Length: 131
Image 1 (cartoon, helix red, strand yellow):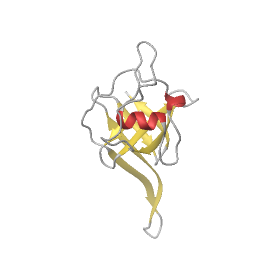
Image 2: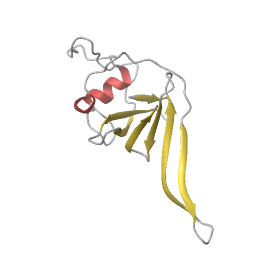
Image 3: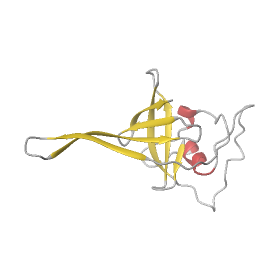
Image 4: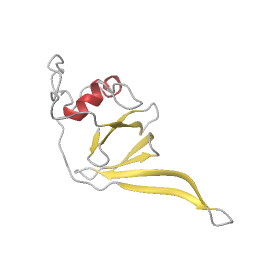
């Protein structure tokens, strides 16, 4: 899961049946400082963590057009940590014979603090990890 401060969204990647591909969803960040950081009734197994804050809300409840992400993602394998990155948005298309831009698709890329590049197709759909 990734939290993007602007536009205030959480991007969740879950496994796809296709090797090396993931599904991804854009969820609104519905957490606020007035809410608890986690659900004290939930206890992760040893070596796992409960997602907290905005990740926790998306994990437990979902948001926007998407329901809870808990079943798709499982327990967190590490505690959340922040990093600065640049979100690259690449539009793909072509100009027709009358010089009108015809959009074909687009993708987003971001690089984590370990140098791993994540490519997200469209506004939700398929994602890949480029190492």
